[in-house]
Amino acid sequence: MSSDIALVVFDWDGTVMDSVGRIVSSMRSAAELSGLVVPTEHQVKQIIGLSLDPVFDILFPGINGTQRQTVFEHYRDQYLSHEHPPTPLFEGAEQVMLELKQQGVLLAVATGKARKGLKRMFEETGLEPYFSTSRCADEAESKPSPDMLKQILAELKLPAHRAIMVGDTIHDMAMAQAIEMPRIGVTHGVHGREELSRYQPKAIIDSLPELLTAL
Image 1 (cartoon, helix red, strand yellow):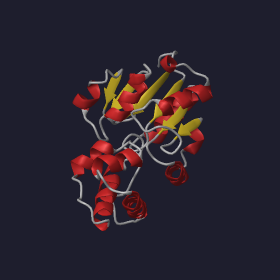
Image 2 (cartoon, rainbow, N blue to C red; image 1 turned 180 degrees about the vertical axis):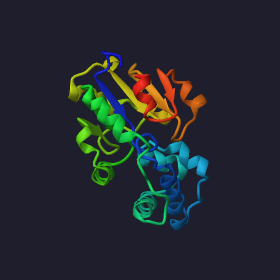
Image 3 (tube, rainbow, N blue to C red; image 1 turned 45 degrees about the horizontal axis):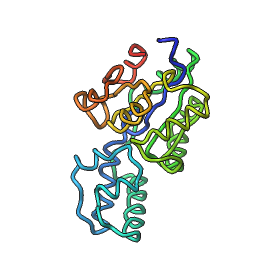
């Protein structure tokens, strides 16, 4: 690994956790229960990683505040139900984090989840001890704004060139590119190699264990 890299920032959904199927299913069910036009699977995939406010603007343009709250409540309930696809960690995720920590690298999370949602995922997976810090959708501007990354770097007192962003969406790549932070795309989530490559990542990998070689 390059000795210049002191911090690896992970996106969560579609990068660490295989939750894309559940997000898509839950959002489409929430739309149906709310009496709104149900977005396609492709449409929902394109917004994964964004905060819910811009998500609702994109998927349900023109809805009012009451409708937003209704969709949000249905989405939350659907996501927590057991009727939707499971959300396992991607193969090798914890081993990769363990190896990075053993090499003295700091780890962080920058996610479109709200703090409450990430806390629940930390409790379910037991991964929280690996991370020095994290930023969530309700604590920063939505991706692709680099606000999350700026906050993480400020807290850990590191310049952007000593960190690397690992994510599965163009939103992850764009926010890192905005502050000239090196980035690595992962193809096992939302966006493929062609889409990720537009943001000049350091590497594009197909599984998390490949990260150790890419670094």
